Length: 262
Image 1 (cartoon, rainbow, N blue to C red):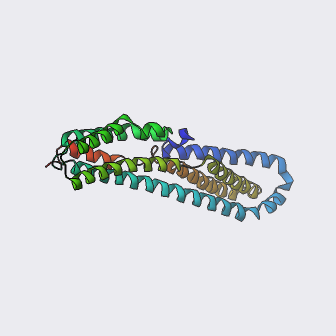
Image 2: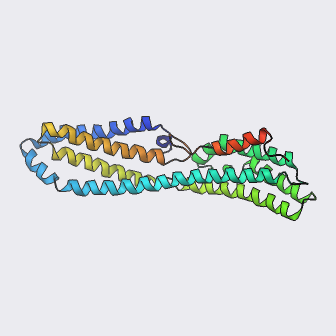
Image 3: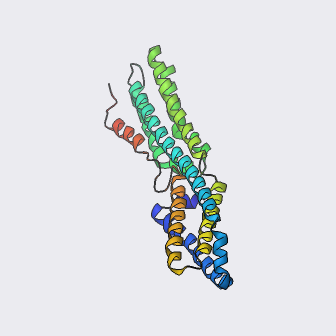
Protein backbone atom coordinates (compact mmCIF):
# COMPACT_ATOMS: atom_id res chain seq x y z
CA UNK A 1 0.00 0.00 0.00
CA UNK A 2 3.04 2.28 0.32
CA UNK A 3 3.12 2.75 -3.44
CA UNK A 4 -0.53 3.82 -3.56
CA UNK A 5 -0.32 6.28 -0.67
CA UNK A 6 2.61 8.02 -2.32
CA UNK A 7 0.59 8.90 -5.43
CA UNK A 8 -1.11 12.21 -6.09
CA UNK A 9 -4.87 12.61 -5.65
CA UNK A 10 -5.07 13.39 -9.37
CA UNK A 11 -3.58 9.98 -10.12
CA UNK A 12 -5.40 8.00 -7.44
CA UNK A 13 -8.91 9.06 -8.44
CA UNK A 14 -8.63 8.16 -12.16
CA UNK A 15 -6.96 4.89 -11.15
CA UNK A 16 -9.73 4.05 -8.69
CA UNK A 17 -12.40 5.07 -11.20
CA UNK A 18 -10.85 2.88 -13.89
CA UNK A 19 -10.90 -0.12 -11.54
CA UNK A 20 -14.43 0.43 -10.22
CA UNK A 21 -15.78 1.52 -13.60
CA UNK A 22 -14.11 -1.43 -15.30
CA UNK A 23 -15.73 -3.84 -12.84
CA UNK A 24 -19.09 -2.17 -13.44
CA UNK A 25 -18.70 -2.45 -17.22
CA UNK A 26 -17.66 -6.11 -17.07
CA UNK A 27 -20.56 -6.85 -14.73
CA UNK A 28 -22.95 -5.11 -17.11
CA UNK A 29 -21.76 -7.15 -20.08
CA UNK A 30 -21.82 -10.45 -18.19
CA UNK A 31 -25.22 -9.93 -16.57
CA UNK A 32 -26.79 -8.77 -19.85
CA UNK A 33 -25.67 -11.94 -21.59
CA UNK A 34 -26.46 -14.33 -18.77
CA UNK A 35 -29.73 -12.96 -17.48
CA UNK A 36 -31.43 -12.08 -20.78
CA UNK A 37 -35.16 -12.66 -20.13
CA UNK A 38 -34.61 -12.78 -16.34
CA UNK A 39 -33.31 -9.21 -16.11
CA UNK A 40 -36.52 -7.92 -14.53
CA UNK A 41 -36.52 -10.60 -11.83
CA UNK A 42 -32.84 -9.93 -11.07
CA UNK A 43 -33.55 -6.22 -10.68
CA UNK A 44 -36.31 -7.04 -8.23
CA UNK A 45 -33.96 -9.21 -6.19
CA UNK A 46 -31.21 -6.59 -6.18
CA UNK A 47 -33.46 -3.70 -5.10
CA UNK A 48 -33.69 -4.60 -1.37
CA UNK A 49 -29.91 -4.92 -1.13
CA UNK A 50 -29.16 -1.34 -2.23
CA UNK A 51 -30.01 0.38 1.09
CA UNK A 52 -28.04 -2.21 3.08
CA UNK A 53 -24.96 -2.05 0.86
CA UNK A 54 -25.19 1.74 0.66
CA UNK A 55 -25.37 2.14 4.44
CA UNK A 56 -22.53 -0.35 4.94
CA UNK A 57 -20.25 1.50 2.52
CA UNK A 58 -21.21 4.89 3.97
CA UNK A 59 -20.49 3.78 7.55
CA UNK A 60 -17.17 2.16 6.68
CA UNK A 61 -15.96 5.06 4.55
CA UNK A 62 -17.05 7.75 7.02
CA UNK A 63 -15.37 5.93 9.92
CA UNK A 64 -12.14 5.34 7.99
CA UNK A 65 -11.92 8.85 6.54
CA UNK A 66 -12.67 10.49 9.92
CA UNK A 67 -10.01 8.35 11.62
CA UNK A 68 -7.39 9.15 8.98
CA UNK A 69 -8.25 12.86 9.00
CA UNK A 70 -7.76 12.88 12.78
CA UNK A 71 -4.40 11.19 12.35
CA UNK A 72 -3.41 13.73 9.71
CA UNK A 73 -4.37 16.62 12.01
CA UNK A 74 -2.47 15.01 14.88
CA UNK A 75 0.68 14.80 12.77
CA UNK A 76 0.35 18.49 11.87
CA UNK A 77 -0.03 19.37 15.56
CA UNK A 78 3.04 17.34 16.51
CA UNK A 79 5.17 19.14 13.92
CA UNK A 80 3.90 22.42 15.33
CA UNK A 81 4.87 21.33 18.84
CA UNK A 82 8.31 20.29 17.61
CA UNK A 83 8.73 23.74 16.08
CA UNK A 84 7.68 25.40 19.35
CA UNK A 85 10.01 23.20 21.41
CA UNK A 86 12.88 23.93 19.01
CA UNK A 87 12.32 27.67 19.30
CA UNK A 88 12.20 27.32 23.06
CA UNK A 89 15.51 25.42 22.98
CA UNK A 90 17.09 28.04 20.74
CA UNK A 91 16.11 30.79 23.18
CA UNK A 92 17.22 28.72 26.19
CA UNK A 93 20.64 28.30 24.59
CA UNK A 94 21.25 32.04 24.94
CA UNK A 95 21.45 31.77 28.75
CA UNK A 96 24.73 32.97 30.32
CA UNK A 97 27.26 30.13 30.38
CA UNK A 98 25.55 28.06 27.66
CA UNK A 99 27.37 27.05 24.46
CA UNK A 100 24.98 29.06 22.33
CA UNK A 101 26.68 28.63 18.96
CA UNK A 102 27.26 24.88 19.38
CA UNK A 103 23.72 24.20 20.59
CA UNK A 104 22.04 26.25 17.89
CA UNK A 105 24.28 24.72 15.22
CA UNK A 106 23.42 21.20 16.41
CA UNK A 107 19.73 22.14 16.57
CA UNK A 108 19.75 23.54 13.04
CA UNK A 109 21.49 20.40 11.78
CA UNK A 110 18.98 18.15 13.54
CA UNK A 111 15.94 20.03 12.23
CA UNK A 112 17.34 20.13 8.70
CA UNK A 113 18.03 16.39 8.77
CA UNK A 114 14.53 15.71 10.07
CA UNK A 115 12.90 17.85 7.38
CA UNK A 116 14.97 16.39 4.55
CA UNK A 117 15.24 12.72 5.54
CA UNK A 118 12.86 12.11 8.43
CA UNK A 119 9.67 11.97 6.40
CA UNK A 120 11.09 9.29 4.09
CA UNK A 121 12.36 7.28 7.06
CA UNK A 122 8.96 7.38 8.75
CA UNK A 123 7.07 6.39 5.63
CA UNK A 124 9.46 3.53 4.89
CA UNK A 125 8.89 2.25 8.44
CA UNK A 126 12.47 2.87 9.56
CA UNK A 127 11.46 4.18 12.99
CA UNK A 128 14.72 3.17 14.67
CA UNK A 129 16.84 5.18 12.24
CA UNK A 130 14.54 8.17 12.69
CA UNK A 131 14.61 8.10 16.50
CA UNK A 132 18.31 7.27 16.77
CA UNK A 133 19.75 9.52 14.08
CA UNK A 134 23.28 10.85 14.48
CA UNK A 135 22.07 14.47 14.34
CA UNK A 136 19.62 13.86 17.20
CA UNK A 137 22.28 12.19 19.37
CA UNK A 138 24.63 15.07 18.64
CA UNK A 139 22.01 17.60 19.73
CA UNK A 140 21.33 15.77 22.99
CA UNK A 141 25.04 15.38 23.74
CA UNK A 142 25.82 19.01 22.91
CA UNK A 143 23.10 20.31 25.22
CA UNK A 144 24.12 18.06 28.09
CA UNK A 145 27.83 18.85 27.69
CA UNK A 146 26.99 22.53 27.88
CA UNK A 147 24.83 22.10 30.97
CA UNK A 148 27.17 19.82 32.91
CA UNK A 149 30.42 21.62 32.10
CA UNK A 150 29.36 25.24 32.51
CA UNK A 151 28.50 27.66 35.27
CA UNK A 152 24.89 28.03 34.18
CA UNK A 153 22.31 28.75 36.83
CA UNK A 154 19.98 25.97 37.90
CA UNK A 155 16.86 27.56 36.33
CA UNK A 156 18.71 28.07 33.02
CA UNK A 157 20.03 24.49 33.00
CA UNK A 158 16.57 23.15 33.80
CA UNK A 159 15.02 25.17 30.98
CA UNK A 160 17.63 23.96 28.50
CA UNK A 161 17.22 20.29 29.42
CA UNK A 162 13.44 20.56 29.47
CA UNK A 163 13.41 22.11 25.99
CA UNK A 164 15.68 19.49 24.41
CA UNK A 165 13.66 16.69 26.05
CA UNK A 166 10.51 18.21 24.57
CA UNK A 167 12.10 18.13 21.12
CA UNK A 168 12.89 14.45 21.66
CA UNK A 169 9.37 13.71 22.87
CA UNK A 170 7.85 15.27 19.76
CA UNK A 171 10.06 13.03 17.59
CA UNK A 172 8.66 9.93 19.32
CA UNK A 173 5.14 11.29 18.90
CA UNK A 174 5.76 11.56 15.15
CA UNK A 175 6.72 7.90 15.11
CA UNK A 176 3.55 6.98 17.00
CA UNK A 177 1.49 9.05 14.57
CA UNK A 178 2.98 7.19 11.62
CA UNK A 179 2.29 3.81 13.23
CA UNK A 180 -1.43 4.63 13.33
CA UNK A 181 -1.71 4.50 9.55
CA UNK A 182 -4.62 2.95 7.65
CA UNK A 183 -4.84 -0.84 8.20
CA UNK A 184 -4.65 -2.70 4.89
CA UNK A 185 -7.51 -4.98 5.93
CA UNK A 186 -9.81 -2.02 6.48
CA UNK A 187 -9.00 -0.67 3.02
CA UNK A 188 -9.71 -4.08 1.46
CA UNK A 189 -13.05 -4.40 3.27
CA UNK A 190 -14.03 -0.88 2.23
CA UNK A 191 -13.04 -1.53 -1.38
CA UNK A 192 -15.02 -4.79 -1.43
CA UNK A 193 -18.12 -3.10 0.00
CA UNK A 194 -17.85 -0.37 -2.62
CA UNK A 195 -17.47 -2.91 -5.40
CA UNK A 196 -20.44 -4.89 -4.06
CA UNK A 197 -22.54 -1.71 -4.06
CA UNK A 198 -21.52 -0.96 -7.66
CA UNK A 199 -22.19 -4.50 -8.87
CA UNK A 200 -25.60 -4.50 -7.20
CA UNK A 201 -26.41 -1.19 -8.88
CA UNK A 202 -25.51 -2.71 -12.25
CA UNK A 203 -27.81 -5.69 -11.65
CA UNK A 204 -30.58 -3.37 -10.43
CA UNK A 205 -30.47 -1.33 -13.64
CA UNK A 206 -29.70 -4.13 -16.08
CA UNK A 207 -33.23 -3.97 -17.49
CA UNK A 208 -33.06 -0.17 -17.94
CA UNK A 209 -30.73 1.27 -20.57
CA UNK A 210 -31.39 4.98 -19.95
CA UNK A 211 -31.25 4.98 -16.18
CA UNK A 212 -28.39 2.52 -15.94
CA UNK A 213 -25.61 4.83 -17.13
CA UNK A 214 -26.45 7.65 -14.69
CA UNK A 215 -27.04 5.48 -11.61
CA UNK A 216 -24.04 3.22 -12.06
CA UNK A 217 -21.72 6.08 -13.06
CA UNK A 218 -22.75 8.12 -10.02
CA UNK A 219 -22.07 5.24 -7.65
CA UNK A 220 -18.76 4.41 -9.36
CA UNK A 221 -17.62 8.04 -9.02
CA UNK A 222 -18.63 8.17 -5.35
CA UNK A 223 -16.88 4.91 -4.50
CA UNK A 224 -13.76 5.97 -6.41
CA UNK A 225 -13.62 9.36 -4.66
CA UNK A 226 -13.97 7.77 -1.22
CA UNK A 227 -11.22 5.22 -1.89
CA UNK A 228 -8.90 7.84 -3.39
CA UNK A 229 -9.47 10.26 -0.50
CA UNK A 230 -8.81 7.52 2.03
CA UNK A 231 -5.49 6.65 0.37
CA UNK A 232 -4.50 10.34 0.31
CA UNK A 233 -5.17 10.68 4.05
CA UNK A 234 -3.56 7.33 4.90
CA UNK A 235 0.02 8.64 4.79
CA UNK A 236 0.71 11.83 6.78
CA UNK A 237 4.32 11.95 5.58
CA UNK A 238 3.92 11.46 1.84
CA UNK A 239 1.45 12.01 -1.00
CA UNK A 240 -0.79 14.95 -1.83
CA UNK A 241 -1.76 16.01 1.71
CA UNK A 242 1.40 15.12 3.59
CA UNK A 243 2.26 16.96 6.78
CA UNK A 244 4.52 19.88 5.94
CA UNK A 245 7.91 20.34 7.66
CA UNK A 246 7.82 24.10 7.00
CA UNK A 247 7.30 24.93 10.67
CA UNK A 248 10.60 23.36 11.72
CA UNK A 249 12.36 24.70 8.62
CA UNK A 250 11.29 28.20 9.72
CA UNK A 251 13.16 27.70 13.02
CA UNK A 252 16.30 26.79 11.06
CA UNK A 253 15.98 29.97 9.02
CA UNK A 254 15.65 32.08 12.17
CA UNK A 255 18.72 30.40 13.66
CA UNK A 256 20.72 31.15 10.53
CA UNK A 257 19.66 34.81 10.52
CA UNK A 258 20.65 35.23 14.19
CA UNK A 259 17.12 35.77 15.46
CA UNK A 260 17.80 33.68 18.59
CA UNK A 261 20.67 35.65 20.03
CA UNK A 262 21.44 37.68 23.11
